[in-house]
Image 1 (cartoon, rainbow, N blue to C red):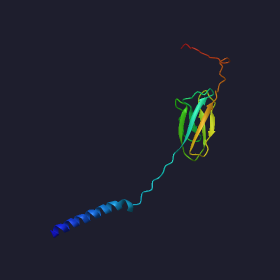
Image 2: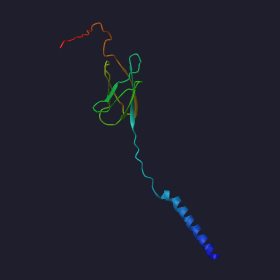
Image 3: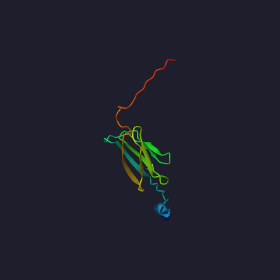
Image 4: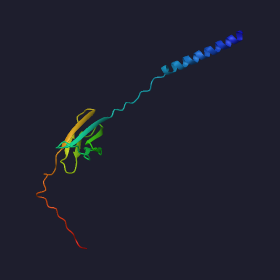
Length: 134
């Protein structure tokens, strides 16, 4: 009986030590430092002088190859990377181009109105059409 009692005592002691080891295992290890990646964005909303959204407007960060095109609602988003120029060129065929300068802030929104690049009339325009026989 005494031998059985000592075996039970030994098993309980081992179980206690195992539970104790598992509970302090997480405390003994220092947490790994995580690199925090903060990505900032520049938002654009582009409309014409009548307030209509302009899809397909080109937006390019000056001096880089970073750019985008507005969606059907005239909206676009570009990730902001520090360094280089803070100017953005906004252009579309038939409209005057606009350059805007970004402030030093993580998130910034531009509301841009593009003006027509033509006078809107066809009075002084000539349309020529020629056919040639070969």
